[in-house]
Image 1 (cartoon, one colour):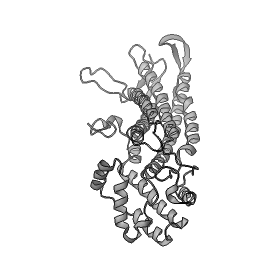
Image 2: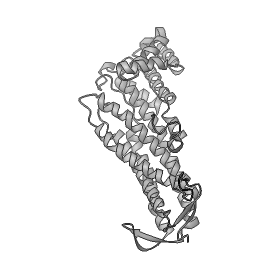
Image 3: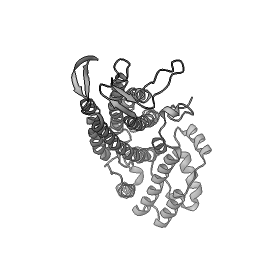
Image 4: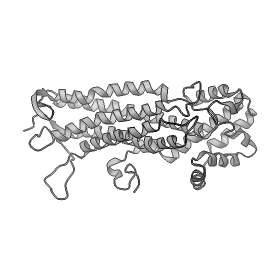
Length: 352
């Protein structure tokens, strides 16, 4: 079975087209090549190679289409795709091959591609948080002044209004947007350290090369490589779990509000039962709970991925590849579902 996020039928529940496109193989290859083209040009700017050679190499890289079968075989052999990708590019670059990847390391390429991906993801998540806030404002305007029984520890407590319930769903959304904005400078940073992270393979030109690349790519330029310092990546994963956790709370509330005998909310488009035709299951609300719990589970793995040995790790780093894209997919889907759920609500409050 493939991942539920791109499964041939489970994907009907879990997949998100925009979120998937950000992590697609085509987009990942594009980001890898973006690094290599920027690096070649920076080598020319720094005088590491002749400028015309650097430009010709960059032009080859920008239009290069790698052989994915060879790339897969190379990844099996080397544990990562970059050695094979670089060999393919150098072969295509011919006499300009000396301007390709010279002095960089595989992790420089893959980590920079990652932050380019996360930059796209951040834009999508921020947009969806804005849209969800607007959808909740609309819910408040439609139903906010209606009465609702407040419940503490799942027991009837005191009357509240629908707007009180919605406020607990909506208030964290602006905080998440603030967190995303605050995290961007810490996550959208060039990775460039060379084999052991100190740029020694670039002679004394490392800073010049990094300055030029960061400017070209629109990324921050940290003073040293973060090959084995993954706190910002893990912080980003934590923020993904915070977002889905907020939406999971909303989903859990909606599930409870739809219970027969409670009947505090009605929705269009509920799920049917194969055995009990009278049921309308709160599928979207349940999915928000599931996605929140999924991301919360992955967080422990991301914290395990903080533990890199010495200057670079193969094991801990690769663990990120398995976890972070799945968390991103869950978060993008969760925001889309929450928005759809708001639109589907046709009544809130004491509906009897």
